[in-house]
Image (cartoon, rainbow, N blue to C red; front, top):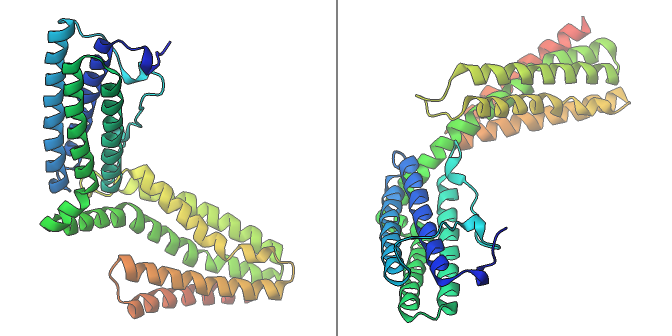
Length: 319
């Protein structure tokens, strides 16, 4: 069973500190390795913190040998009640720079609290002196983590890294999501409004719209996932893109399908057409904001395509 921190012997406290420093060093090394290509400035800071954590571990080992012998007890954080447990963010397939900076700040704050608590309860003056010194160093690290963004801004690297993060977000989320939303909003217009005009029945139009939306979502999701494995393009995990694309495709079609749950056909048509206009406006705004397309050009391209498909559905439904 896990022990409480107060039950640990001084030697076990040092062993726990060694384990903590070694784990943190490996985590910082993993972060640095994963971020080095796209965020070199942050990776360099993490490398420096990794090296310092290794130095701390070596000093703690030497102190343990001097005070308690060569054998270091096998004590891990999960063996101590209430001890800090970190989510393995470093194992995630996609690693966000903001998440890393926040995680580093939390890690250093937790380490600082550990050293302050350990120093307060030890009666060995040499051990307490070392723990106090390490607590002071962790305070510096915590301030470094908190000031990481400011340091990057001062050096001019923050803008570069933020731009890289924005490009990844556009590649991995916005592009597949926008493709799905455009396909779902535009391609389903024809079958939904053709069914509506052909039957003059809201429920029939709703069923056709749901079938078209879900079918298009499944089709677009698989098409996106199978189109690119993301290794060379940097567009991220294929199935993540496929899920984003599929869900947005379905959402795009469902938006102007739901109004046909209104029993009055004429009211349902008015609401559906209004929803279509809102959908096209949203798509135009996303293209303008994230794809660097002039707003008027984006609106013209999207609206012309939507109107043509809409008219096609009405003509076919009215035939």
